[in-house]
Amino acid sequence: MQFQRSARGRSRPAAVSLIAVCLALVSPAPAQAAAHPGPPYGDAGLQQRLEELVEAPGGPPGVIAVLRDGRHSRVVRAGVADLETGRKPQPQDHMRIASTAKAYSGAVALSLVQLGDLRLDDTIGERLPQLPRAWRAVTLRQLLNHTSGLPDYSKSPGFLSLLFADPRHRFDSRRLLDFVADQPLLFPPGSRYQYSNSDNIAVALMAEAVTGTRYERLLAELVYRPLGLHRTSLPQGFRMPRPYLHGYDTSPPPPPEDVSELIGMSGVWASGGIVSTPADMTRFVRGYAGGRLYGPAVVREQRRWIPGGASEPAGPGRNDAGLAIFRYTTRCGVVLGHTGNTAGYTQLIAATPDGRRSLTFSVTSQINQTQTPDLLRLLRSVQEDFVCALLKDKR
Picture 1: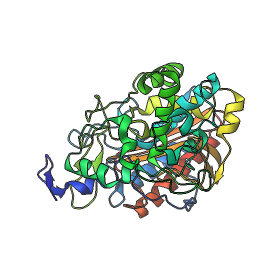
Picture 2: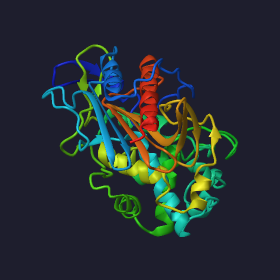
Picture 3: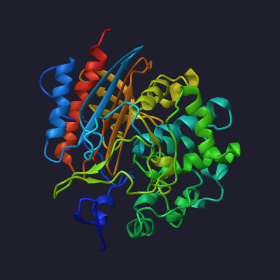
Picture 4: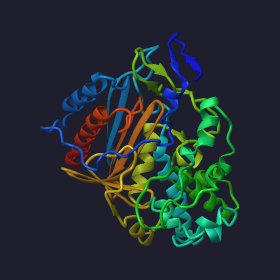
């Protein structure tokens, strides 16, 4: 096993930082988290909860939350965006959004359903006949709600060997499913829920196949432009746009290691490669959860919930899965959104079903059930308090 040395001079196996990259090589947490006692819904209480998260053992160096109700925004933050400079997190800082990018591929697909270019019952066999015959019965609906049974390319030995050998390896994003093309489905399509990064790669390929347009351009035309996202992109490389929230590996031994630019995005693509900002993600989730990109009929299909289907890591409260969106039922009410985690970052975007109220919650370390279960319990508890503050704010 090769070792890498950070700028601070610390040695560490490269695989430690790579073992759960933005490909969600983790197990979902239980769908219900214990609630934090008491209602710290004011600015001081929310600030205290963020500081509790930052100061926890292995906690993130920084966190920023944006709560928005109509035209009013509250920004609550703790820690720093950059340990070298001590700069504070800002809503315009770039960051890796990890698997919340799956909501963006869902937005593209559902927009094409609205336009009539795709149907939710379209199959891989119809739209992507070059993919394995064993997968041909899988529908777009099943890809979007993770009941497809597609094997996860991000867990394949061939993919992982290339990634561990060179974290910045340039993959052909449109050939990622080749890593599992010799494998059958894990279960009959539609028979059960299992989160898979392969699903959203297939969604993007299906969108390209029916439009003859590259996925990156579809994002720009169907998502970025309608929702006013000006600082959101889908890069292939490892460089981050400036300024950005630095992401850190906080596992022992200290000090935290900057892993912001550790991994290239070509191996993640439509499943988790987007770079955005808290401000842009706020605009996105308000429009996406509120159904602004398509009509009521598509929204109804999107909100056919699979009980207990969790995003990764699990979001606050009880989790249920829809079409590239999740329902989080907290003690204070319901919000819709998505989560994600990658090396250096953990994300939650959520909004009320009408899109009026929203929460973007961004953390500068990777927190998940496999690596940091205690910290994930704390994170979900803090997030639930922020959701309660969002829903109880009557301004």
